[in-house]
Length: 279
Image (tube, rainbow, N blue to C red):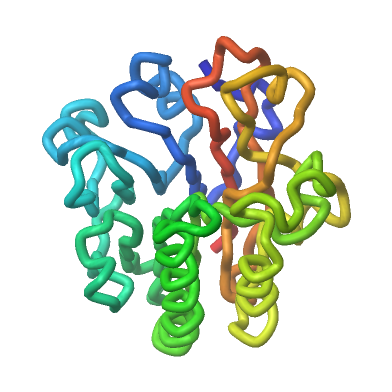
């Protein structure tokens, strides 16, 4: 199970909102691997999930009482699915990024919360992994383009916007252990994909919260292949993000990747990314 033990990591300041995001790689499998223990220990106010890959009834049964659950289920069974779990009820919800092509894809869901009289919008997003030379990659570029168009609208309309999730692109060499053998050879490390993130973090007007807090260091990674020695050797990718408007980034006080201490204790091939925002 993935349970941080440091008091500093677990402690939460009064008034802080803790937002966690994780690609669960199938909620049923994650729960079989003791994901519930992590949820119980983490004291999160909002948890965003990607790749739920289960019917709504199953998700609600597993999560149990005490949470408001917003779930955008994918039309294709066993695929995608995103959710926002919250301790307080959202004041508004939206389940589509604005392109009917993705209406039932289970890749985007928005929830508005009222915090101190301001609107705090949280988005759980799952960008396609893609596959070079296939429709999957075309869909990925179409989705990233739609994000480029939609994110400025959210920023203009809401007081604070936070887009979290498995965005399936490394932004820089610092975000992947093995840059050279993957760069422009694999989906997720293509210059055309990276250009979208250059835009997100410049003219579109958002900031990479985890990178802002970590500084100019290698990683910290959030995904490691189940195969081989990737996890043991920390040959990871940083593809899970908290992407926030500048005023919200300024409220971010603490970030942590809940990497399991051992391979066998993982509940997913992704580790949760947890950030505290001081309102």
